[in-house]
Image (cartoon, rainbow, N blue to C red):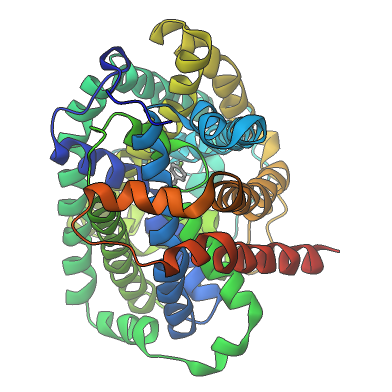
Amino acid sequence: MADPTPDANRGAWNSKLGFILAASGSAIGLGNIVFFASNAYQYGGGAFYLPYFIALFVMGIPIMILEFTVGTMTGRSIPLALGKLAGKKGEFVGWWSLASALTITMYYITILGWALAMLVGSFGSLFEPGATAPFEPFLEPSEGVNSQVWFFNMIATWWPLVAVSVIWALTAILLWKGTETIEKGVRVFVPLMWVFMIGLVIHGLTLPGGTDGVAYLFTPNLDGITDIQVWQGAFAQMFFSLSLGLGTMVAYASYLPRDADNVNNSLLVSFLNCGFEYIAGIAIFAILFVYALNPAGGTLSLSFFVIPQGIAGFSELPLLVKSFGVFFFFLLVIAGLTSAVSLVEGMASALIDKLGISRARALALVMTPGVAGSLTFALPFIVDPALSGDGTLGFTLFDLVDHWAFRYSLITVGLLECLLLGWVLGAEKIRAAVNEHSKFKLPAFFDWMIKLIIPAILGFVLIGTLYEDI
Ligand code: PFF
C-alpha cells in the first residue's frame, strides 16, 4: 500500500532540521502566544495546566504520530493520503479538513494583518486619536485605554486591507518553490521568534511584580480540575496549537523520506511547541500582573488591547518599553506567518496531488477565496463595535466562524481520522509502519488509543460543546 519511493517532483526537505523547523514553525503561532494565555486565564491559571499536560500525552502526541505516519506512508497530502489508506470516506474527511483549513486561514491572516498594521503603527502616531480615517470610527473608546483607541482607529483605516494583502503576498513568496522556500524562511523566522520570546520573558520577569503572574499561572488549582469546560478548553487548545486536523502535518510529513522516525519527530515538535507556549505564558502573565491588566475580554482583546497596553506602552511610556511593543507585534507576525504558510501548503499540495497542476496554479486556486475571505474579515464593519465595559470586543462573524471551525470542525476531523485509520485501515498497520523506522517502539496499547480512547475523548468534547451551545 505504501509507496516505496518518495515522489521527488513533489518536493522534499533538505534535512531533518529543515523539517523540524518547518513543523515547529507551523505549530508555534498565535495559538501559543495569545490563545494559550487567554485560555489559561479563562480557565483559572493553574487549573488549566494539568488538563493541558494530560491532553499533550493522551491526544496531542499520538495524533501527531498518526498524521506524520499518514504523510510518510503515502507521500501525499491529506485527502489523497486518507483516500489511499481508508478509501473514499477517508478522502472526503481530507477535503473537509482542508475546507476548515481555508476558513481558519482567512481569519488567521486577518489577525496577522492587524498585528502588522499595529507594528507599523507602533513606530509613529499613525493611529493616535484624531488621526484621519477614511471610515467613520465606530465608537469613542474609553479615556486612557490607549491601545484600544489605536486598535479602533487602525481598523477604521485602509491599513488592515493593505497589511492583510502584504501577509498573503509574503505567504505566497514563502510557498513559491514549496519546501525549498519554506525551509529558507523557517531557518530565519523560527530561531528569531525564540529569541524575541525569550527577550519578552526576561523583560516581564525583571519588572517589579512580574513573578506574581508566573506564580498564578503555575500554582496548581485543583478546584478547576473537576470542571468539564476546563478539559474541553484544554483539548481544543492542544489540537489547534499542535496544528492537527487541518492537513498541514500530513503535507509536511509527506516531504520526508519514507523511513523517517515519526515518534522522534512528533516528540521533538510537540515539546518545542509546548515549551514555547509555556515560555510565552510566563512572559504574558508576568506582564499582565505587573500592569494589573485583566485579560478577561478574550483572545483578540488580549492581543490588541491588553498585552500591548502592558508592553507597548504606546504614548506615555519610555522608548525602551515602547520598543517591546514593537517586538511583540513583530513576534506575532513572524510566528503567525510560518503557521499561515503551513496551512496554505496543506491546501496547495492537495490540489497539486489531486489535479496534477502547477504550484503557481494551486496557489492561485487557494489564494483567490483565501484573500477575499481575509479582506472581508478585515473590513471595519465585520468587527462589532459593541465594546462592553470590561473591554470585551464583540467579533460577530469572526466569532461564529472561529467557534464553528475551532470547536467543531477540527475536533470532528480528528475524531474521524482516528476512527477511519483505527478501524478501516487498522491501527496495528499504522503502528507497524511507525515501529519499522522508529527507535522507540509503540506498544500495542497505541492501537486502543487510536481506536477507542482518543475518539471517546474527542466525542466527549464535541458533545460537551454542543450541550453548552444549545
Ligand atoms: N498551531 C498554530 C498556532 O498555534 O497558532 C495554528 C495552526 C497552524 C493550526 C496550522 C493548524 C494548522 F494546520
